[in-house]
Image (cartoon, each protein chain N blue to C red):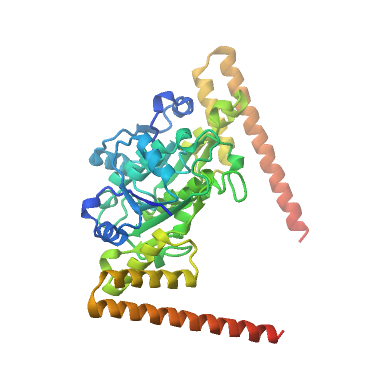
Length: 225
Length: 225
């Protein structure tokens, strides 16, 4: 699967969040930083080649920043969609949104008034009109205040958001971890490589045990009916 | 009441809708056409002086056009809101939105997927955060296809949106019409002036009869309890 990461940020050089995400993405997607003016022809090529398009931006005034809106206004036209309007059909559209306030403040009756889903309706409209599948957004709350543990969790969530089928099942996530450990084991040497391999074996064994338990649970439930 | 009309349109010269609205507004509000770059200091003065701020724009990709977002991103900051965050508090924020599709297509399960209110959540968030009162938007569906009757209705709705207390009662609207007729009568001459005055007298008489009927209806209801 080809993932295109469209970065719309007016002050990219100053953004810790975006620097972190750039390092976290690695080769998991093609990173495309928006700078006006746009060449619609090359923008179209990028979009047509992608299977998953991720819009990555800070939420400014409960909306995409102007640079990203400019890109949508100028690039998303009849040429992009094609004569039958289906050139983006079947692709996935997602959003990685950094927030200056905690995500918990978003929702009816809460400090920010509406949920993040509410505020992202315009993008959901874009997905609908272009016949792309909308992916639930990945929200990043106040990155600057996050400790190492939250950042590690974000790293994993982000990498999975770029590459895993969405919505991802628990088994998808376990297999993803196993693949990461295998990759680390290949790259590491000596004791370190052994440790990664052991971790991977342990993870797969636990997953097998979990599957067994789920099978047993199903049998018990069926027996009780 | 001072109304500021903030026009955000990337192709203003080609817009029939905006030409119509300009003529319809007359002296009922101060018209301010957005052109980048902005001078935040003078933008702030305009906003501080207004009681009602109307954002007037075509809906592009279910959202404000880039020029309007750029203005929000650059002008709406701590300087504008002041140290206590209340420099816009108590003002009204409205939107005059022109649509390329019929308004009837907006809503859950309909062609455009969500209602216009849904798509305008980001602006409602701006109103909330700046402590302005959000006015229900005035939507203009496919202006180019409207006949003279629809355009006349739009003219009235727009003029009322700029100047009447919102939400406007039926009596507010009747008084508004009476004031318009009085104004026309003053400007006209001879028979024409007489006709406006007669129309105004007839309107006020009907309004008085309607008030009597409502009083009677209230008495009957109270008698029945």
